[in-house]
Length: 265
Image (cartoon, rainbow, N blue to C red; front, side, top):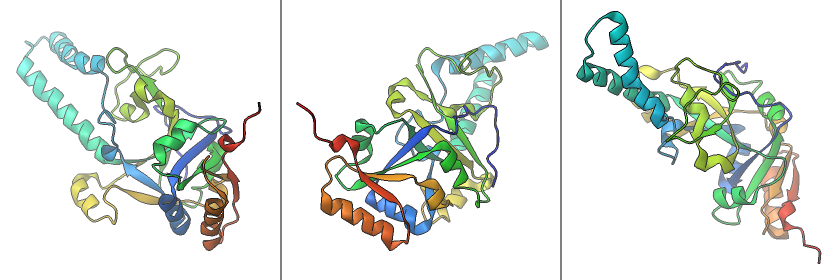
């Protein structure tokens, strides 16, 4: 597998420190299967996932009017709306065709990420780098894209920005690397994989062991730098995490969260 350079992606620096927060069940699944889980884009909780900003949507009808004027034809708003509806349906299908694995960019731990992804005290945070993450897929046949997420005001912003995103052409992939500004705290970097069997996606997903997505093989030793235990974990919980790692014959450094350190007075 080779990571493809794609101009619509926002390329991260290879030395960026990234984190993935997960419960123990997902962590053990990662070690047991030597695979990262990629979730279907249409199964994320954010209903705006894969959608477009309001101004981009409003521009579509204007574009149809311009095309009609340029070709010397009368503008037919009903016909134009049918075309717009067709594009909208393609965007929805496009979401179902792509699977995503998300990471958090940060030089240090993030307390809000602990609380967001761990509903209890049972979980871990993987610390690694972009370089290690990408190299961990070296023995995988899948084609994977990697991009930083760009955050916008979906009521007032547009895709194009001469500095941040100088892409003026339209492409259905663009919504996959943008999210609403309300999610800015996630500082997300994501891996994106396309399901090629797009002619009958419903049938494809019905035949999968997990209909919410699929696992893609990784090399654990290349992927994981350090595993951090939650801020409120005790010695027993830390030992249990070490046992899980040992169970699958991995040698991974385990540390307690930096947030657990006692304050100075």
